[in-house]
Image 1 (cartoon, rainbow, N blue to C red):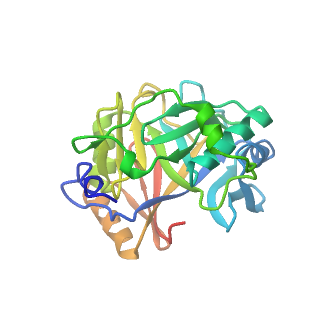
Image 2: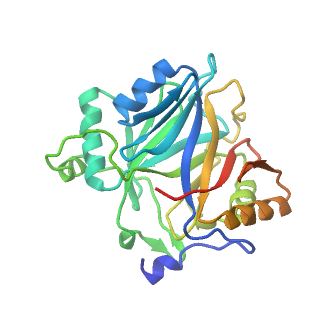
Length: 298
């Protein structure tokens, strides 16, 4: 990592997350596992690692769990305008070639997807049967990420799909490869100042992108973003128990001491912190729950 990348972003005035902090698995509430599982396996290319009644755990070769699907029959599909809460969770592929193979795979199975070039990454956007947003992306090398002063520069530009497919070579798509992770989560929030208070001041993320219209992005360790927030659905209600929604997402920390430090900082900022064994649960103003956990990062 270059010295320039080490200097990007605005640090919180108080507690700051360790550089090794990462997003872990996401837990989603869906209406029907019989409808969801074929999408997550046949379209996205994930593997079912375990399933017990109304809960399925999905991941990639090597046993890395990325997503839990929790069935609650009859929950409402996410409306097109969105709800406060999950905008999308983002599956990070290990390289550009894998993303190119995924593009070819989507064409073969007839799945629709939007696409964008974000300067720091190349991305595809999908929605599961309940309308939950999904991004599948690959990062460009960090030394190629543009900056404006201390801000990482991001944009939404057309994606060169032909060049991406060429980068895949002749190797066929065989599912999400080993090394795939959850790269980031992105949320619809009510206001940017409240999002900054929670994710920057209380959790300790750096602000890294702050001039993107209607949005604010946060990260640890100079990444382009581990958490995105936007006000593009600010007039919508928050996702409720009767909605397909994000139940929680993991913030993985390198030591148990860091779990305690984040929890203490959030409590001092006025947020409720709940014990969950060795983990801690904290909920933002729009009902988005983060699980602080000490786990080895995939």
